[in-house]
Length: 601
Image (cartoon, rainbow, N blue to C red; front, side, top):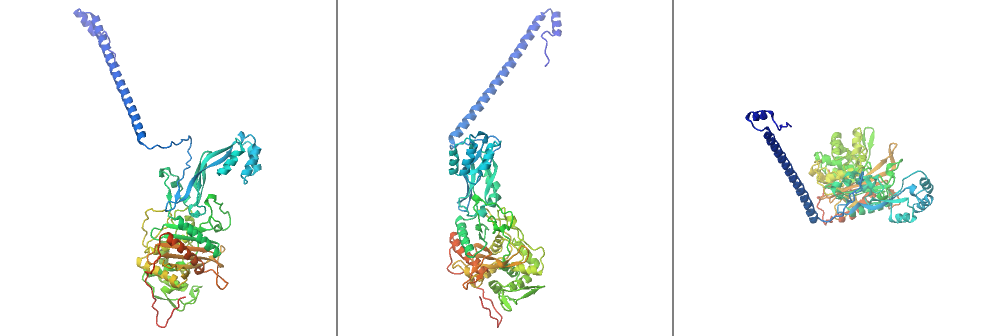
């Protein structure tokens, strides 16, 4: 800043020349400077007053608005804020399609110890071993009397156990609140839900993480606070699931099977209404996985999704439907069925001798291997592979479970003529029962691809047209004849127009070849045949049914079919499907050449 002198020399000299007093010049300049200083001070004071007034106005306005907002809002209980890294313990519920709880949270307590604070550590170890027989008293004594300052004892306590520990009266035994995952229905839908475990843990909270099934597949969604606690709604129906597991368990026992699985699915949406795999487990007390041996021996193994089975004659409808779609055949076309049929050095036989010719309708109804192979040869290898790929048999199912990728079908690397032949009647390609259910749903859905899902109510993208609607309708009609006059007669539940196909496949040995007395029996069905709404697939692992003559039978018609019939009787009313009094399906009467007669078995 440039300072103006009070006695400027130029003015002083001019004043002296004029005879004026130079002190007046200094007095005038001093007065002007004082006036300027007073003006600046006044303006500064005014600015400070305006600023303070503005601050007070904003502050009081904020307080007033906040008080008005609180007065007009609903009262809520305050939440305690914790310092440090927060452990997300809240997990959303899982419900069925009707909102019934399948998985929820339960407030419980953990038990931990501060050995340095214990009065009598030996007595504490002795008393704890009485409350928890699974604990080792000697190990506890060693831990309590050593140098450890912290020790987890139990991650979850029941109220009775907590009271028993409290009665010990040891100040070094402490409790911490936490949430645990609870499955109120026990074993029900255990493979679908999967189970949960603890992740990051603290003495006052623990993070709950999904271990398998939808719990793990939707782990991030279930833990996301942005969902505001909204439950995950699954497509399964709790009543249908309970009925399925009950019937399947009884069927597995009666048929002396090693394991069993069933899938009940909506045709148009692909939503799985019920899906069971036996043996199962309780997700509240999930067992440890097997470390050796056959994975299917573990109750954790999900046969519906992870099982890779050769599904036998249930595949026969695929080449037939494809050939009908390509206008190579129709249901009345006569096919050479002379058995055995030779392909290279291999012979293909039929279970019965059906004579020189069969109509396409009879090939499906009587389940002729030879006739099916003849039809598959008309289709050709490349078109056969392309069709199976479009049905989903070359990839894992997209169902929302972590186990789904492990159930990828076992597809032959090479596809010579003999492989094309065996695949046409369900041997040489191993897939899960869920793959089969999806493929049958595709046929029943007017040939539009159906992808299975466990989520209810989401908008489902329409699948590609794999088969023409006309060919798909004819295929369902052919499957209906399997039930009315073929190997599926035992599942002809009155009023529901069942259409389906049996399949009995020898189980492959781990070392190569096939067992002679072990099979996988399957029945895949759609109903009502005149307007398909649902698909049901039942698979029994190593069944053996007693026959009237005192012998044993392993074929699907006597093992899987009766179980499927009872399932349909129980499940159809639960989903609101009323029995029909009259069939709406046209009857396909095969036209035979003169002199040839066929007898339906």
